Amino acid sequence: MRGSSHLAIGLITGVAVAGLVPGVPFSPFGIALAGFSSLAPDLDHPDSRLSKRLGFAQNYVRWAFAAGALCIAAYSYFILSPGREQRMSYTAALAFGLIGLGMQGGSARKLALLFTGASTAVVGLYFGFLWLSLLGAFVALAPFTAHRSWTHTLWAAAFWTYTGYLANQALGWHGVAQFAGAGYASHLIADSLTKQGVRWFYPFLDTSLKVPLIATGSTSGNLLEVGICIGYAVLVLAFVVNRMHF
Picture 1 (cartoon, rainbow, N blue to C red):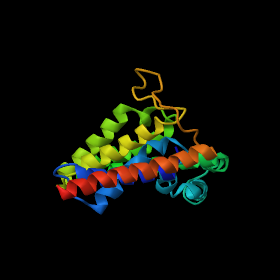
Picture 2 (cartoon, rainbow, N blue to C red):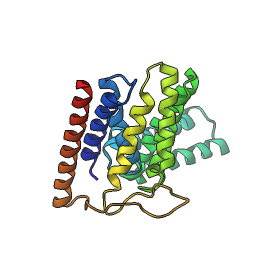
Picture 3 (cartoon, rainbow, N blue to C red):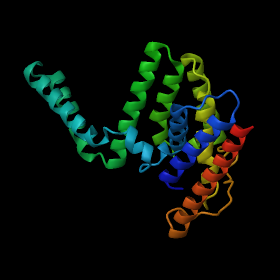
């Protein structure tokens, strides 16, 4: 399913959580969190909407390697004395430069996400926020997994929900776990409607569970996605309005 459809379903799910789950406040931030969570499983895909947003520095990764190579070369030339250590530094500079030149778009994206996630994890450890460290670890590792494998499982949904629970405990704002978990689960359920399906219990069960209604990327599939989003929105709105009257 397309990223735009996942985002729409995630936001609608956020409205459902805010309007129907007892004790959860109606919050634009919570709805946005559900939308964000609905995109998280596709961090394992190179062209996903969230990968492109979080890997914002991917276009500059190769330049960073080139700059690193120049810095090492300059240090070797101006600081080190001729000899074995200087030759090793020149070799390291050459290696950095060649890696930067040879790095393709996908590799740059993965590295950018690795840096983004690792930095987030370090910040979480520094301030004592375990939830932030777990979030960073997810962002750092997800791009290195095969598409619709580890991030598209029941265990990943549980991990994401637990991260939300820890954030709930740390921030004192009730509903984080519900918004996060429901948004993440909405992605897996939506992908289960495609012909590829989802391996919910991978790696213990390597079978895709699916109701193969949607051929992702096809005209009929795109129209069906729009129809599902509209129908889901109408259904949620009807339930929320009904609950408000009672």
